[in-house]
Length: 365
Image 1: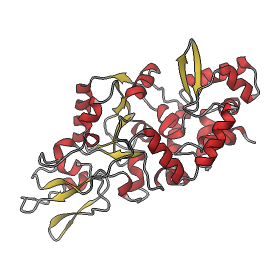
Image 2 (image 1 turned 180 degrees about the vertical axis):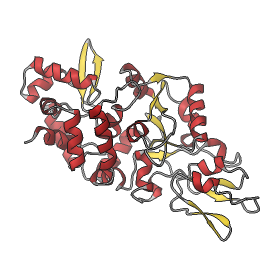
Image 3 (image 1 turned 30 degrees about the vertical axis):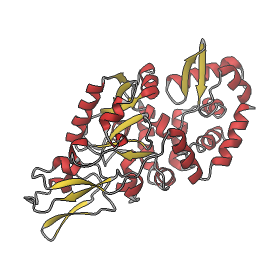
Image 4 (image 1 turned 180 degrees about the horizontal axis):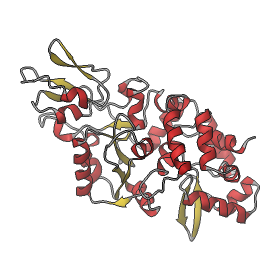
């Protein structure tokens, strides 16, 4: 079997996999040499982590050769590399969210291969890879509304507040938005992705992010809200690994709603934009133009909202100069409790559970 295809098949086992397409195969060939792909296909999937010696035995190559190839891939952040117990351990990283993004985070030199891989990544989202991301009921991410756009009389749960999510994290770091950096379609701010907990620690250790305080993180969110960006995070109650600030033209989290016209229900918050009766709306269209998913429009000389398309981000409310819009609660839906619950549900929806169990057994034995 072609070594890159062997690697792609293993990457396709992740909850968001890597379907075979012209673009995805080209990306793998740009980021992995033939020899690297052959070894990477034998690197275990998380949470398993193996030494170079064990991976060499699985791949049928010499220990020195495997160690050199693994170190090279680890330094380029196409696989996970961790210092532990006096040595290095390796684990396979998914394509998304994973090594695709890590090619464009802070500190990465965007060479010709990375630039072309970024272009192909965004092209791939229009095909089978886009369906893998957006074609299922459970999304890996959810929208977190801008806090100041929710009336103080409404109940707000901890998982719906950026400040509460940030305060629950032990470590915080910020890195560049890989989507905007790779697509280059807008002038939105770049250093906007807040990493939390072990994700922050790992990326700081790899030189891909810098540490920030809770206050600095909240200042970044304010800047992003002013820029019309949408806060999205892992679709879990317990502390997520990342909070992104997304634009509609570059960011993968919104492309399913905007470009592929997928239902907003999979990513939306529990809120919806609602015109305020009797407000002094000037029909200035600031809110219409600011809406990241084109959910607002003018009908009968007033602002109207397509509720099925609204993601409840609060950008329109934040931008409205006449205070003519409000976020109102439409549901009390809870995200999945933990990342394990989320991953299990996504894997089940994609029919991958049995394949993953077989692969774990293969990795171990």
